[in-house]
Image 1 (cartoon, one colour):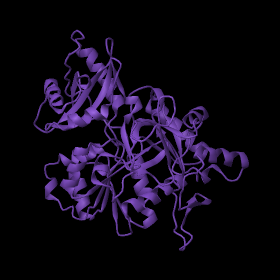
Image 2 (tube, one colour):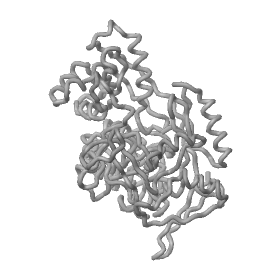
Image 3 (cartoon, rainbow, N blue to C red):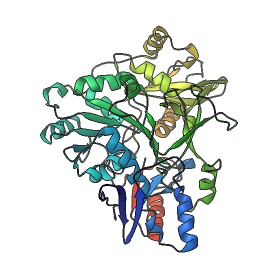
Length: 470
């Protein structure tokens, strides 16, 4: 793979000199709103003018699940990722003295950004691990004197559950980053206390790029519960259902544009045009901005549960359930229901040696003050959560499929308070240590078909595809 390279020019000419294959281009280090052209438009410009080959603006392809389980490919541009890396250098105060550890797949968006496109720009040392196992991770952090570790929420949960965590020396570690999913504030606070670090959270999307992050100097309540301010140069809008921008404090769908947007969908111009229809990229998340310019996420639009006409945000229910002392991990999903449309289902992993009932969770949520219509009415007990192939977040699609199978097998009459406890329901695919492609048989399309699509597109654009689904 032809990775981008960065050179910092002489004082007064601080621009990134990017190189991809045989093509070179400059990217300004000072980014401002309005300085951008969406990458899919750059690609159109290049193709129509013959100014350069595709590789001038695109350096890799990324696989995304897409609709109905059919994979689609996203163009990733080196210039956008390098621009984002420049911002993270400032916000994390990284230098050549830092040692950055990639604890997740190096092809995952968060690790790709920090490891591939941030660390090289300051000459920081990079250390990687083949796969996550708490003891191995702790040994790596200690022996390599790691200063910044790239995690995702699920792996932080598992690290905190490691009974020998307190026996290791993490005195060199100053930053833990967490991207890919919402990290409960309670867990973020526990990470800071247990490891003696500052937790930095960020927000982005595989089909857009990096969008926002917290910074070292942000107030603790922002770092623990929010995703910070938009990256420099990003124009962000929060819109209602009619597409009109709302004022700070009012939640809505997130739209963004700027120099960090990575590209469009390969061979899917209608999908690309639809995503940019308003002139901003339509993200699949909703949240709000506050008066200080901080972005606060509420959850993913497609994960919204509608029970009897009432909207339920899974992240809110998950955060409340996680406060139960016996819960290690939780994922909340909506299951189809003839009467209510959907009902809330909680999939949980309990802490070692403990068990839990649906009634116990409902009692806990009542005591926490969560509205009763948001309480789970189904419970699945798991040994471990199913993860997406990049191991960056819980695979809720797999949870829904398996939960529906369990429901059809275990159905005892369809009562509104029917209790479902299946243990264990889910397993995880054995992961290849190379982590460059994870076969799956779930959903439409076989891994062979997916591999063929990826390989063909990689050949067409003369780039090496990243074969993972984030």
